[in-house]
Image 1 (tube, rainbow, N blue to C red):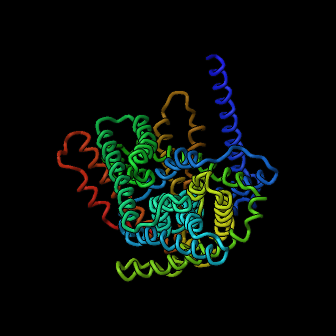
Image 2: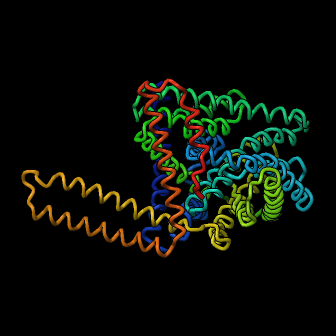
Image 3: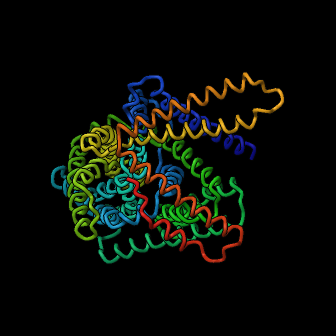
Length: 523
């Protein structure tokens, strides 16, 4: 018994050492852009992949990736953080094209990749379909991280994130159906496939909704920021595990829970201070997990195995890109015709090229049964394609956005908001300083010196803001939209305060629904 206990302790210590090593390397990579300015041209997530490749090249393996590690440990918090920040009114506006991309787009992707591999690489159709299913879903982790870092437009980011968050359910169902084909334990049946798809998605939405609304009403009963923050973390993992145990899509369950908590629960059950604490916590957790995931993706590459499957990888890449083009351009125009989505051709081009694959594809490939003879070929192909999308497509997405003028005034807006934030902070500092003027022990010389410094900084910032507004008149529309959003947020917070105080018996959701349906003009 003592020997088993000692062995268990050794394993825990070894795992902790591995975890700290991975984290240390990741955080070290995060500091590179601050030390070497050239690295600032590369998004942080892609820089992690490159460093991971460097480690793999010298055969330094930090830890072995497994489908359980990706799907159960890493994916739920990343999905939750992305969905928590999605605004329902924006998502609802583009729900039609997102659903088309997430469902029909996945089918087109599987068919395109399978056809290419079968016809041009001589791969058995059942194996080709399995590779297509593994690569059919754009990865929410990769896409969300990249588009946020690049500062892409809000509409474009919503379309890409929405598709990435919702197409995983379809991809996982397709993979589950197709993985039995090469083993000879199942045949394709359209009716059963559709039934399983709706069952998996329905269970995910149902359990996600129950958890989301349950926690939303629970947090109305108390105001404990740390407890409420912990509940969101518990909800992310518990929703995923419970949904998977009931045969549903854990991905869809987590996304549903996060959408409800982010758009409803955080409004009626959390005061503004708590919402900020929870949001910052999830931003930290997403950075933390992203730092590990992207480093390990690069570190898992086996160059010898990739070299042996170069032809298959090349055919898969071409087939995937062509299938993605057919899917995006066709479905976008269909959505424009049916629902007046007004997705422009430049936006469609970015959606096509920015369809990165990542951890979800790798997890599905690693889930292929060891009894399948072609397992190593499938894993090598998927890893090679994921590496291409992250490095080639990922590194060229920003130039494409700039070429198509889709980054817009995002850098200017950020510069303006930073100046405003600094000015507000200094103004509050000045107001506090004035309250200390008559405090015993404070000399007038010190007070006047500090006041002069602060007023000088405020005046410099005001000149900078005035210059920005003179040079870029389009910022005025952005400022107006920002103020409109702030006013709506204050109105929603006021309703929530009345509910918590028991002064408003009427259900709050109609109020919030009215507010959320109002256009805020953000782009």
